[in-house]
Image (cartoon, rainbow, N blue to C red; front, side, top):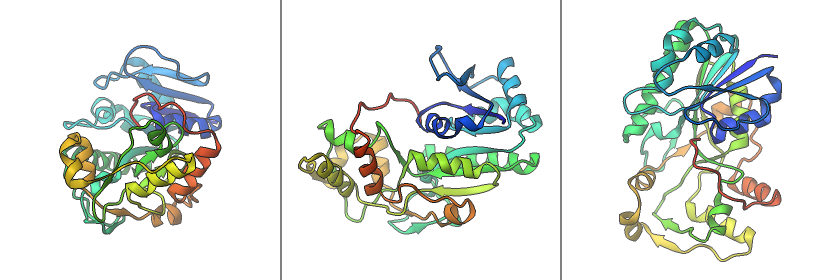
Length: 295
């Protein structure tokens, strides 16, 4: 039995604790602002993203495992900026897992990328992710404890999926020739986190089938017994998208997951979006969309 410290307690961290929290004697999670319920077994610790307070320093001293899901700013990784010295001295007995993004690869015109592919991020947020990855891996090497960096594909799961989008009535399929997106069910992220706790290095966390968005939305609509959402050509849709949404369509790659399976021995519960959506539909989806917390 041990202590888990979660920097950030959004969608993915909550699901990890729901699946694996019983393995820990104590679970601590940081929050920024007003007090909110984190669940019966989760202790709250305030972290403003700038300064490590006394209770956070104490939590670091008690932590056996650290999960970091707070994203970096364009200037720095807030956890490392506030806690690097304390982390270097903290007796983390198993390891640290840092949640990153496949966005660090940038655009590869639909080609396959793996962990040996040199990252070439194009957006400021992806460049910040890559810088944070490098800093966390360096901390692991210098402190003698493993740091596993998980590059996550697009996250879906309960309350956050194509079934919800279609049921909400506002879904539309943007058609761009050759465009695919990579996805991963949050339950498979949870098992990947657990598998990475004693490993140093970078691992892609994506399912087996990068797919066009219209295929996913169409499959969700069929499960719901509805017609597929309207399809809009990229040339007509691009101008109406937010800069963030447009940036997703300006990058195209197929993320390989062989290292996740071979080194971490992860066996995906939902190897394709069809497996994941069928299971979510059988469990009662669509439900209300989750609150807008970070992944």
